[in-house]
Image 1 (spheres, rainbow, N blue to C red):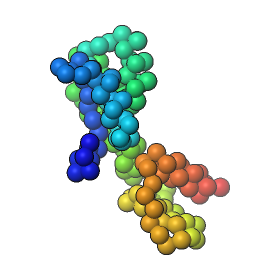
Image 2 (cartoon, rainbow, N blue to C red; image 1 turned 120 degrees about the vertical axis):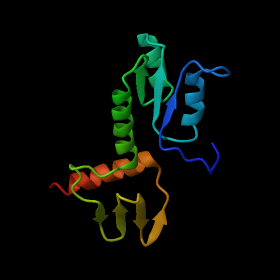
Image 3 (cartoon, one colour; image 1 turned 135 degrees about the vertical axis):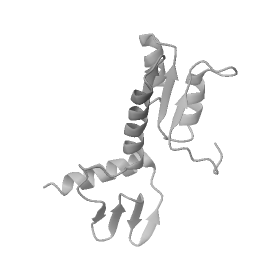
Image 4 (cartoon, one colour; image 1 turned 90 degrees about the horizontal axis):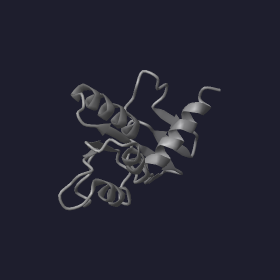
Length: 134
């Protein structure tokens, strides 16, 4: 993936002409933590387990209901992009020298914006949200 391409989600088939989707998923996963949903006709339990072991976030079997696919995509995007939901209490956490903006994904420490991988930002937001409940 180039620095110009930043997909929000990837729908990936397992049976591709030049490379199998599991291998491609592993390569994509080494570069990004964007959600990857397998959309495939390979339906055995072993196939599903293999998809998850290569880094897939969901596994949808063909034939599929388009509304279900749309709902699964929406759920993954909601988690990965921290789209505010009705359950989210705060969007900005201020701990003095340490600030997190859940809407923009900005992490500020001692006045300096730090790059924070998505999974780590999610973890920080989880802890921040948990702290505000006490």
